[in-house]
Image (cartoon, rainbow, N blue to C red):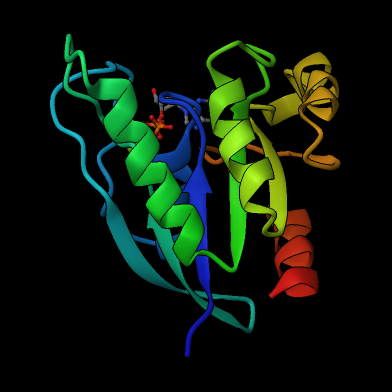
Length: 163
Ligand code: GDP
Ligand code: MG
């Protein structure tokens, strides 16, 4: 069976951009508005000799929904349960925000292997945010840019060591 990798984190950190980069196609909708639809996407990945299934979570959210957080949480929990490893994504430019914490808590509680991705760190931007990411207690962050493809080698090594 193919191992499963779940991409987890609050909205707008770049999960779908990372998903698309891994899958090599634009299967996931990337948008900076926290609104409209929410969907879960899966794709098969061949990444430098590694083969796995990847799940993108908590895509675009329905705006103004009372049950939004509950549904995001449920979707994230389901993906974590299926996952052999979680890619936990933060926005390194924004740093660690309160909104990151409930997602980090779900991952910690599941106790499965986690790779921490400090995204949007292209060109060395967001190094302080990457540093803050240590406070999540999810291990050493990988400075990454899903948009520009930085940190891909480090992510590959981390996945290789975990899968
Ligand atoms: P998601 O809600 O976590 O799935 O985030 P998206 O993948 O939809 O991305 C949210 C926003 O962040 C979009 O405007 C993306 O273009 C932007 N974004 C994603 N990855 C990067 C990155 O590596 N660097 C920068 N600067 N922006 C990014
Ligand atoms: Mg998304």
